[in-house]
Image: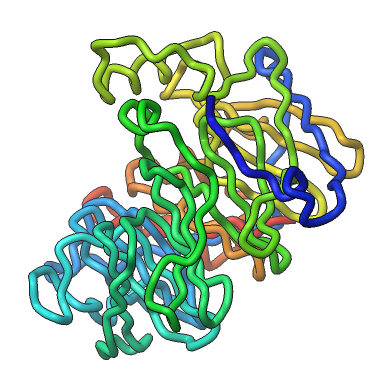
Length: 366
């Protein structure tokens, strides 16, 4: 069984109220874009030979610029109008270069841009692209958040522990959370689920194959919400570990199962609602649940009633309450509701060509 060390089990603080979100997986309901968004903004990216972007993996915004990771692990700085400014670092083995980048963040304590390498390194740059230093980590990594000037929360989905706390001053990992059994680590599906995030000054964690959302308290996890999907509830620690299945085969089994609700990813939360995507056996039509905090009611949907579908999301700016996505030019009409665009954005849409770079889409939340 998956052992999780909860804060209240060790008596470190008083018990927390556990909120439950009940999800009727099979009841598809109506949800309007107007319930979620005030405005949709489009930012077509400049298309040029030295910055041809195949596929975007991550988007963050800082001041009036965007930083993106593309499929080929280039990191680009783009201005607010989508114009290319510069590449950050470069592909290679040099001190300012990288072979692979899995995450980028603006360190709010230094205002520097930080690039995370999966084998355990953070490369630090000024937001103008000047290389400053490299920080060797004591662990492999998939995502990270700077939770203080000293502490870095690192997520590694197939480690003995999913979460590690790295101290910059001590140069090592000083605590770990959310242990995983070795047999599960060998089979657990991989994917970009954004399992750690910040909202309202706090840090949260949700393993995509669990029904519990956690809130970070110091260096320990406490339960924040539990997702109750009834007979479709799923926890990977209880899932049969058939011998002979490799990670790919096990991944396919979970993704194709219509008997479970799982693979929860990309948590969007405001004071009014929670919006989160999950999988119920159809990878091409993954539903979302919309939880209304004012009524404590939940609705499940795939497409908005206006006929558009929320694309794969890549960043939630919780301070500005904007969610960012990247959409291929040929698919833009599937994900844009004209009624929430202003006149300038409507004109931008008219000039987008099928061969252009992806279009950044900013969904401004209610």
